[in-house]
Length: 410
Ligand code: PMP
Image 1 (cartoon, helix red, strand yellow):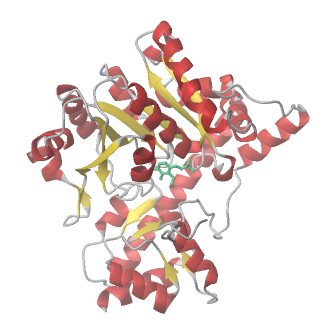
Image 2 (spheres, protein in one colour):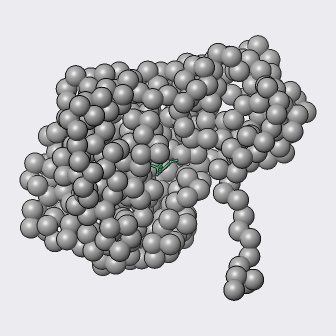
Image 3 (cartoon, helix red, strand yellow):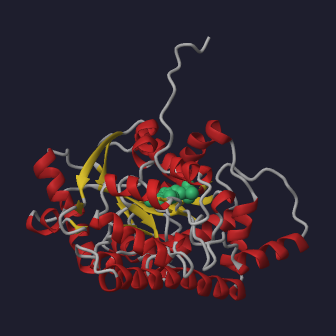
């Protein structure tokens, strides 16, 4: 029956972990995975999460089905975290929201809802490059995926030509690719994956103006709130700016990284709407999108996240833990830069290692160099030269820098 089914290619990101696992050398390092590791290279369960689980266990909760759109307190607190407690649409009860199977599920629900109901376009523009799963998620949601230029390989930074000389991403899209007005545009809210390059607040304002001018519909993917700066408020700047500038937005949120709830699959999808009546209509249709997909979402992760978000003592501890994760990554950036540029005098400019933001760094290493690092130094990363900074620690960073330096010197 299945003789017609061709073997599919391995996932480009998860495939790196498989190669790492098969390697027997004790020096091996996995920098492919986008999951936080502590200073000993171990997975990290946050204390605030452990305490939330203790609290939940003591309250002896049932295992009944959640509603289709999930735990209502969770979506309320998740949207408050993203949009801010003083958000106008939040306080007007005009944000339609649903719990989702983490960020991936939120993007997929959003894609499916827009494909069905967004009246103006079926085209979504993604930054080039973007997280590898964005294209299949939106394609399988029924949207047509196109790209906008984001990253300048020459400077290993934001594509300023596209942003400013060309008056910004949207301008670039419209002028160079004849994008229809009112297309959907996906924006990474903070800690752009894979490049680690974010617009500045002034650039966000410029992007907001252009999105408005060209009537584009902004869809924010916020998978790393808190991971960029260490502050969840600061990292929500772009989303809150767009809302305060009068945009209606779509938003995907994930608690995988900032609460370390990867496998619990806790996330939310939301849309700002005109008023409470419109919100109710939109939510009724989100339910109709979700019901045939998976009926209703899982309980445990949303309960953990909601317990942290709703109990001030846990919230405070969680904020400190998010900052701790962000700070450890920033200290690894400093140290890696020093090792590469100063200790090993590695040819090239390495300032981007320090200036990039969030979990990842786009090193600028070539596919050949990443291959050599895997084969000769047992160091694994994606072929585009992206490394997860969280995979580096005091024990492996010297070996890593020395190996990179050797690979670059050839
Ligand atoms: N968006 C981006 C940009 C990501 O990097 C990720 C995770 N790698 C996600 C969304 C979704 O992750 P999850 O489904 O685990 O929340």
